[in-house]
Image 1 (cartoon, rainbow, N blue to C red):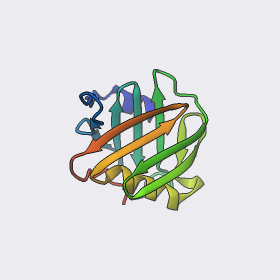
Image 2 (tube, helix red, strand yellow):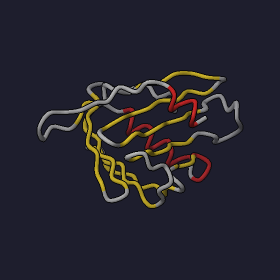
Image 3 (tube, rainbow, N blue to C red):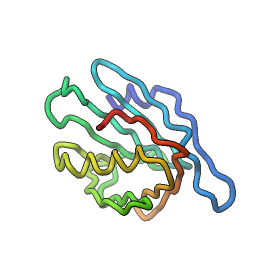
Length: 139
């Protein structure tokens, strides 16, 4: 699935000065019962794959990072917004819904919300702003 997602063109979302990038670069689609979405902020891409209808089994959704071309990082990722923060374990570049479905939903709800959001992972941070809620089909 990752190669299929990476083949889709992704619009970069870059901000000016100290302002966070605007997440108007969310791209996405639907393939074989699964929604997929990509967010690009500078050198970071976050792929969000949601299987709401469980066509690939229960809790088959995942998020994957690509940072500067590297997809094999592990560690802790922090997602922060005005509403608070969530921390998730990243294994080989991915966060899996099956590991903690409730946490996965809290993160995807945060990513879909309007307002400023910061993602911190692998010693770097990326800030962006959703000017309005984004439908990433994970609810």
